[in-house]
Length: 181
Image 1: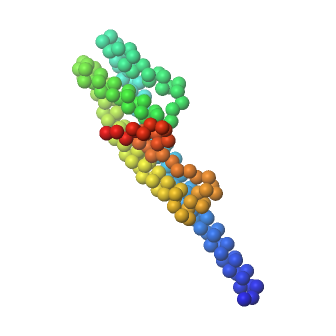
Image 2: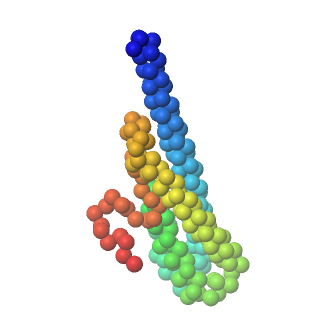
Image 3: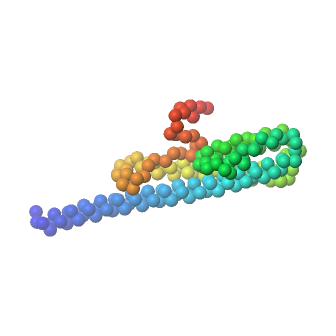
């Protein structure tokens, strides 16, 4: 076999490896971009939800029957540095308080501002559910890239790791009863 042929095979092999690396690198980058976009959307929706719940607190301030601590932890949330997962869980507690107020105090329930906030909160909840599903779909695709061959080789080179789903559960904690029904 002449030296030229060997050199051509080596060049072809290296070109093929470079092409595969570039292809999978671009797949990772596209997947990361999609995940980051939907994370940003979820963050914005959670902030909007938080602001709406703060407006509910302002509406209920004049009612002495409503305990002050019913939604006092909203102030605490401003100061804490929470992940989107944790922030969503905390806002779920505040939303439950909102629903309690709505059911227990009919005079507040008839307030026009309260009704508008109720409609906006329902819309935000639907959007969060849709974004959560889209996020989890993209995380599934990303995690498949991280775990499957040959993309796992590129993933290790660029230090990509598996990411958790947005289900409100911490997959890496020591609590095993996260999935009770």
